[in-house]
Each structure stands twice: as structure tokens, then as C-alpha cells.
Length: 67
Ligand SMILES: [Zn+2]
Image (cartoon, rainbow, N blue to C red):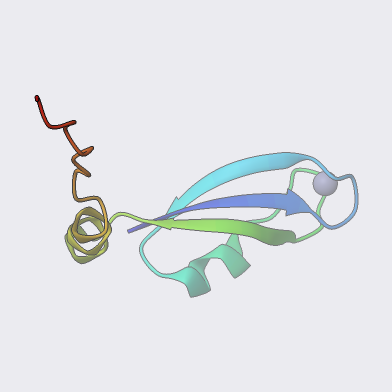
């Protein structure tokens, strides 16, 4: 599943569509009749979430030494 931000190629109406495959975005059309252009894609697959968390390790600040 993908959540895709799109904008119309004619009237610049922005929209969000959820599709099974990215190719399905081609079937989505603006009410004005023109096709959308993809702005950004957010994947819902769990693999992407796991990879994102690896880079999110907590960083411990150094504690000053007590004399
Ligand atoms: Zn349009």
C-alpha cells in the first residue's frame, strides 16, 4: 500500500490517493479530466518502518565528571 501525494497537471488541484501499486496512480484522474502528477510517495510496508527506526538510536549526552 502506498499513500501518494499528487497534483493535477492542469488545474494544480492537490490530492492524496492510496493505491496498492504505484502504477495504479495512473488510473486516478482529477475531476477536471487531466491526470495527476506524483509529488511524493509514503510507503506503508513494515520493512520501511523498521529501517527508519535503526537510524533513530537515542544519543546520550556526556555527563560532566563530578570532582
Ligand atoms: Zn484538475
